[in-house]
Length: 253
Image 1: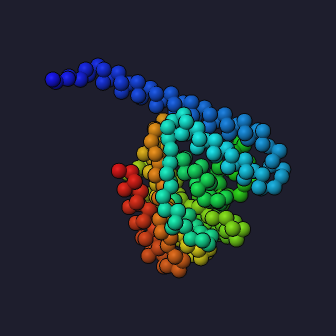
Image 2: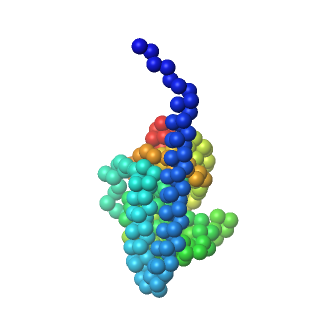
Image 3: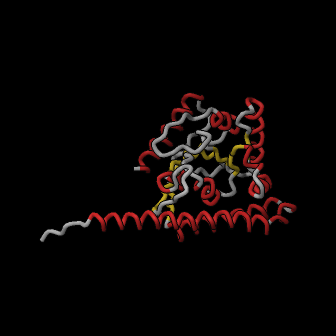
């Protein structure tokens, strides 16, 4: 017996699926914005206290957002390669495809200091908490002076036992897009004299760059074997890019 598919029925199912993705994304985005405002305002007194209080609230908020992604959107994640993390402090060089990793990396790596653009510190509420919790801001138009300041701040937080996270391409890069790796990652690697742990992921498949919609699925994050300190610039940069790009491409398939 041959069953013929009704084109109108197929179209209706696809329209329903598209509408559900939009609705779930809308609900999640509303929760995201409301949580930033409400938790931020309620936690304002913590800005007058020690950094640890703000770091605690940060982790609680991130767990809520990651949980909302699971419940509302159906977007989960898996972490592989934890055995590749050295026992000593490290620099994490991660692929950056979406906003997801700027949140989730705080839960995967203990109390990291993330290198981020200085403009984020000017944001109301969110910027205040970023400043208090202690990140590594960089003025991307500041030249050599900005690089020196970034290294000094990264050294201070690394000496305090916090892993340093850097996105070597400097910004979000969509799946399938190509962008060069900036030399700032080598400057940090050389100055701190620490292993660099490459991290590949496929978050952009489900949470595309600059996209309103988020799609259900499972984000894969792969922690790759560390690059030891002491390599020359070209060898280090080539090895880092190959490790991250090859694995990220495989995860996106």
